[in-house]
Length: 219
Image 1 (cartoon, rainbow, N blue to C red):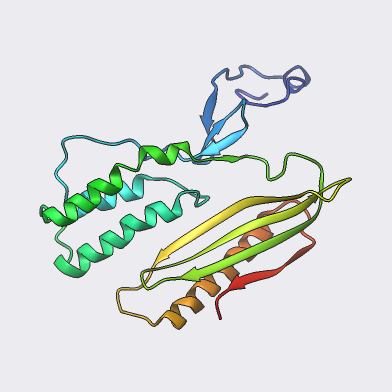
Image 2: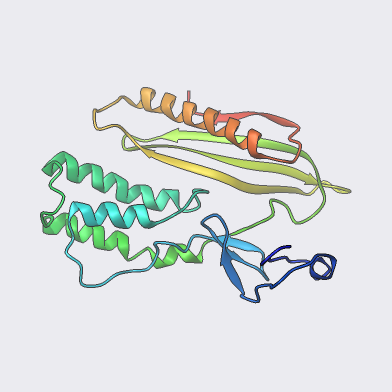
């Protein structure tokens, strides 16, 4: 017997024996927040601003780590704070509880001001809204001096016409190592990240992908 369940199908509940069902408009599913009616996901944990805090290295690490984003929906935003944390370590070492200089404190507060805006980014839970065919997986990898990243998209055609749809799957962003690396080496890191991420996507997908040999990186 199911104790509690959620479903978008009205025909589901009469067909199963359920002790109770939720009537909430949203719930957390493995981290992201799921809005039932719109059937969309967004990042909500760790995106609330706090007040009256003493900003230290420990504070920065705690706030950044609290943003739980397993899909990488806001990876390009959170990695900015990780780059700042790397700069703090480079300049001041690991002085976890010492107040930070005003210049770094301002940069961190500027970043924090964007936290609530991350809740406004929504992703459909389903990859495609219609019956689809000819699914392709496209991976992208790129790098700068500070960050290397990878992202995966699914591309599919709608059954019965030539309309093409793109759907975000997952993204990852990594801070470059403390020891300086050349751009070509960082591009290789991005390519490796994209390749590994592609394999994880293929292993996790339950739909057939016609082609997964599309890897777009700088050479």
